[in-house]
Image (tube, rainbow, N blue to C red):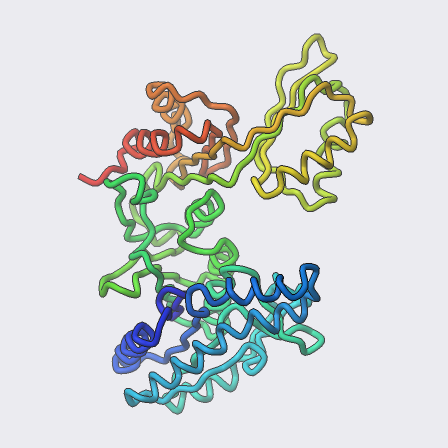
Length: 401
């Protein structure tokens, strides 16, 4: 069981989490609980760190920001003990959640579960701090924002748990954002691959790394609400889903920015000379489209980066303007990426055509297109976000009756 920041936001909520855990214990289950820091706490710790040192030592940063989870593990263990459940708190270095040494964004390498399993046999609940581990040099490490989901899935895999329940402030995975589309439906089940695409295309329900890990280790995930007592959405192997919808969901990401290089000399190696330096600066390029060359001499090249990387990407390319030989660089941050996702696309023709038709009927111009086996993404002007998402949700028959 994993509880996020809103689920443990104050003492009353921690007490209600304890009651939830007790129900599972009373049902005869062995339970490990992973908790995040109380909502807002990690942001405060990050702010303090930045105020002390803008260019800080990442190892000391991890020591500071890992303390948020230390508080909630101790409080939840106490809350469980108060209602008669045997429990103890575990920090990342105590269980030995071994990570690499990439402080601030460490990756889990292995988890020692022998002692927790010994305590399970005695009927004890393990309350584990999410988001943290211990590096090769015995220093505290953190896994990056949203890392508690990854902690929970990694622990579930190491313990060979029957299921990993992620409790959050939503009651499951929806066909799209219910704040935009009132007729969005909650899915009973979704395949790992679809959840991975939804998460990477903008759906905020689960952290991408946690879904990747669940898929790799075949951990059955359930996303459900901390505040309502009803089943959530199961994230499972494709084989568990009997009737596959053509499209399972519509996602959108406002985190996109577009760059167009006008009149780039069209010669072999030009793409490498543009995207190589961007990669060297850790700037991730997503969608790419190259226009047909004018008489074989010049071409326009359009691609997307995250909004946060736009200024850095412009600088990298402007510094190389003479070498690259382009005429102009045109940035545009007023764009949004809208994606339709579904395993059923593999066996159904005309999925992309239906998307283009639905957008055309609403007068929405498509700027860039990219596809994968189970996804079609388009870039459109940001002001059309809601209209595009609603139109596509209806076009693929996802609206609730």
